[in-house]
Length: 537
Image 1: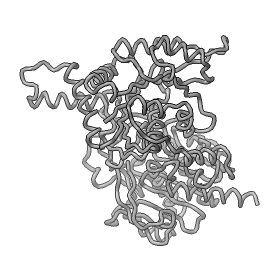
Image 2 (image 1 turned 90 degrees about the horizontal axis):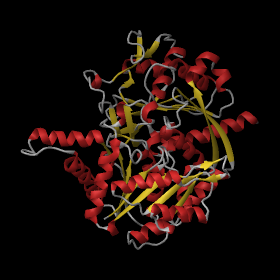
Image 3 (image 1 turned 180 degrees about the vertical axis):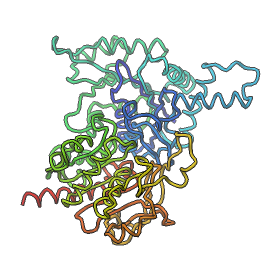
C-alpha cells in the first residue's frame, strides 16, 4: 500500500484539501483505488458543535459522522466511500489513549505524547488502509506546519514513513508563493522558511505544490528546488484558477504531478483519461444558458458555511449546460427591506439548512415570495421547516405557527422536536444523523426527479414536521411526497400546483458530484432556467 501525506505551510486556507482531492481524481483515472482522510489537530471530538464562523460547514457522511468540510471535496472529486474513519481529530486520539489508560492497558507505564499519542495516530493510518483496501491512501494534515497542536501528527507521519519504506511514502507540501505588487515579483522566502520548519521536524518534502497568483518561471523553480532540497521536477505550480475549482485536476495533470507521484511510488499505470472532466469545464466556462439563484441564509458572508450547497447548485448547472450565478441573500435584509426588493429577478430561490432563530422571519418571507409568485423553490433541512411554517401561516391561516426550536410557546407547533430527541442533553453527535431510507409518492415531482420510489439521503436535524397537522396541510394542497418507511416522518414536501416548489428534511447537497449532479438540484436549475425564459418572453 502506498501513502501520500499532504501538509501545508506559511498560511492556512491554502487549499490542501482541494489539492488532495484533485490528486485523488487523477490517480483514480489511472485505474487506482484511492481513499482520502483528514487529520485535524483541534481537541473537539468532531466539528458537530462548532460554529460556522469557527469551522465553516459540517459535512455529514452516510454513517452519520460529522466531519470537516474537506471530506466534501474528497467525495465530490473521487469515488471513495468515506466513513467516520476518514476524519481523525486530536480529541479522538486523546480520548482513545485516555480510555486505554483507564482500562489499564498501559499498567506500569507513563503515558506520553511519544510514543502513545503518535502510535495511536499511526494505528489509524494503518486502519484506514486495511478497511478501504485502497492502492493509495492520501492523508491531509490539517493546520499549518509549526503549529503546536499539529506536532504529534507530523511526528507520527515521520515515524510512519521510517518504517514503511521510502518507495511507499510520499510527502507533498502545499505552500504559498506570494506576489509582492510593489516589487512586481513572486517571493520564495516564505516557502523556504516553511520548508525549513518541516525539515527541522525531520521531514523533507518530495513535492512542493506552490499556490500562487502568477506563473512560476524557470528561475523561481530552480531557486525553490535548491533552497528547499526538492528536485526540480517536484516544484509544481498551482496557480489561482480562473473559473472553477474543478479546473485544479487538469492544471495539476498539465504540471505532470500524477506522473511524478506514480514514478516516485513505483506505480505502473496508464495515463489519466480526463476527457469527461474537460467536458465539465467546458460547460462551466462556456455554458449554453445562464441563470441567477438566490441563496437565503444567515451565514452568507462566510464562504464555507454553505459550501456543499453552492457546489451542488453548480452541479445542477452542469447537468443543464447552464452557468449559475449564485447570489447570497442575507435573511435579515429581507426582514428590513421586504421580499420584493431583495428577491426580484432570481430564477430560483433556495433556503439551506441551519440552526438558531436569527433571520427566520426573513426566510419565511422568502418562501412565501417564491410560492406566491411561482418562482422555483428548493428548501433543505431547515429550509423545509421554513416552508412548512410559511404554508401554515399564509395558507392554513395559523398566524402564530412556528417551530418549537424558535418559539416554545407557539400555539401551533407545526415543527416539533423528534421523539427520540426528547431526553437528550449532550449536544455532540446526538442529532438524527447519516443516511436514512425514504419512500416517495409515485408520480410526485420527487419520484420523477429521482426516477425511483425509494431513496437514501443524509440527515442532520433534531426537529421534524408535527404529524398532528398532517391532515390540515394535505387538505390545503401540500403533498407529503417523501416519508420514512414507517410513514411517521415527513422527508419531502411539495406544492403540486407550483412550477417547482419542493423541500426536503435531508441534505441532498452532500451526495452531489460535478460528474453526477444530484437529481433535486438538476431539476431545480432546470425549473429556474425555464422560469427565467418565461419571464423574458
